Length: 236
Image (cartoon, rainbow, N blue to C red; front, side, top):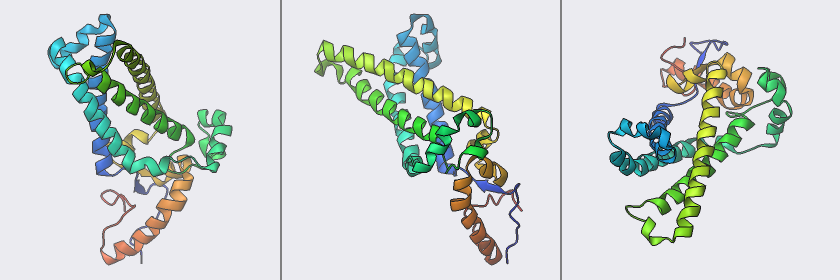
């Protein structure tokens, strides 16, 4: 028999340790890459290169932090891509987007682990990341740029700049929404959300993926085995 009762305050896993670590590593590399990139693109922000010591060092390090950012992003994609496949059901979120912005998402949408807005952002960031990687390699003066013609380099710079703007805008939207939806930040820092939060923002994910695991967790708890969905450190 289960040792715990599932209530709205029960704490459940949202993000596991590997995902959280790679997410924050991605955050660090993103800002390092962004600051140096902005410094190169806008002379008024040249002082940002001091973050890495000198302008020369910043120019040398920028491509490497970009590569590390790409690797961290791809690792996160490997964990979450299957949750970001658009479904027919997602159209409910789009039709009710006005209510979503009012905070009534639970009344108009039946979201899985991610809603349509998050899925659109996910694929937009993938496009931006791969474009940044491809154009960044073409522009990498130390190793590759001499293999390409001036027109190709100019086009690569244009695409790189546009993709960087797309990435920056997407990340800013992501950050704003993370703070706007109360409880989201806690999920990526500590790893857990409450059942109440899951029911309100991602009911399909809760009912079809988490609830069955919670019910099984009751049996595991009774046997003294490790639980899978329950955030055991804190929950009763």
